[in-house]
Length: 211
Image 1 (cartoon, one colour):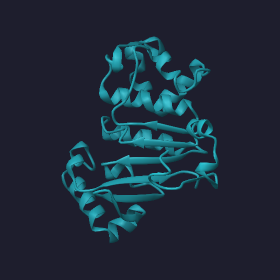
Image 2: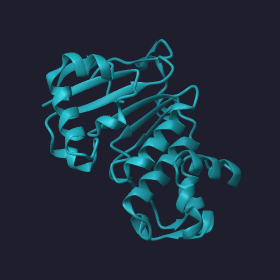
Image 3: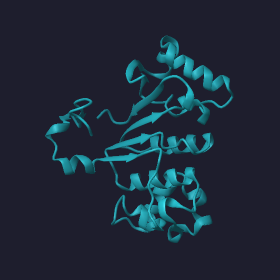
């Protein structure tokens, strides 16, 4: 998204700069840690992902994002949210935003610490559901090792620098920063829980169709 500042990306084997900007942006969906929801119904908020989506598609997206687990308690798709998503918890807001992003059918899905407010069991279910989707390259930025350890490729960042690239097993064996993060999270008993935000370094991963 910031090719001139960060890197030159290839999407589908083509230089990112060869794409029409509107087409490029339409191919990417981003879910941030600090989510954005608007006053209105759940249906109206999800429709920002795809205005033409029917209730069936919206409910399926909610299932993939594990938002279906609380949807009935807040009135289903007709449930009303206050400004900024008032009326649901931080983890519930994150799940609704993931569902909204999935409705866009993106080729690239960027999840920037977007499950930080959900419990570990729910995080595992969301990751399992996303792994089953085809045609999407998923980029995850996370403090939880558990959120990235099954990725095709993990990039370890420390103070803005790339300090390691590899699989979980490769980095655990040969990268001291990654091993320190892993051992501190597992050793604390939270296995990559929210307390890991203060741990040295950070991780991101890329998984998907090799685009």
